[in-house]
Image (cartoon, rainbow, N blue to C red; front, side, top):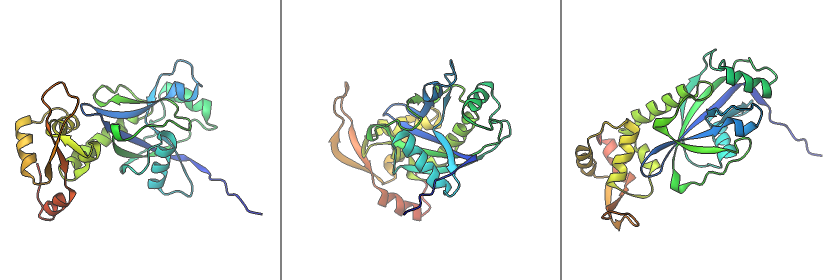
Length: 248
C-alpha cells in the first residue's frame, strides 16, 4: 500500500508573476480578472497578477514556474525573481479584504510575496487559462490602472528590473520572434523604456554591434514596403560581452 503525501500550501508566503508580452507593436502584461476568476464578490472587477501560495516543501523558483504553468499553461520561459514585497498594508484595500474574507480562514494574516517577471513572445505562446485563473487577458502596459493588493508596486519593480537589464543582457530578444525587423526591435525597446529612444541613433548603434545578422527574408502581409528581417546571434553577443562591450 503506497502512502500519498498531500502538498501543504504556506498561508503566509506567495509568488506573484509579472508576465510581459510583445505583439509586434505594444508591450503587454498578463492579468487575471478577479470577479470572473472566483465569482465570489459581486461587482469586483479588480485585475491582479497571476499568483498563488507556495508549498512548504517547494523552492521559490519552482513555485513561480508551477503557478505560471497551472494558471496560464506557460512553461519553459524566461523567469527571474524581482524581490520580496511584504508591507503590512499590502492586503488592506476594501475590495481585497472582501475577497480575502470570502476565500480564507484568516483574511488578515500577513502574506509576504516574492515577485517574478517573465518574458514571452505573444505569437509564440498560446495562453491556456486553468485552475482558478479562467479569465486572463493581455493588457497594454502603459494603460494599466489600479490593480489589486500591491500589484502595481510589483509591476513597477518588474519594469525597473527589465529596463536595467535591457542594455546589458539580451533579454529583449526573448520578446521577439526568431526573425524581426529593425522597426520591431526599435518599437520593443522604445516601449520598454517609455518612449525616449531616438530612432535613427538606435538603428545605427544596433547594426554596429555585430550580433544582429541580416537574413534573406522580408516581412509578409504588411500594407507598406516589406522590411528586411534580422536575427539575433547569441554567440556574437557572448563574445562581445567577454570584452565588456556595451551594445548601446
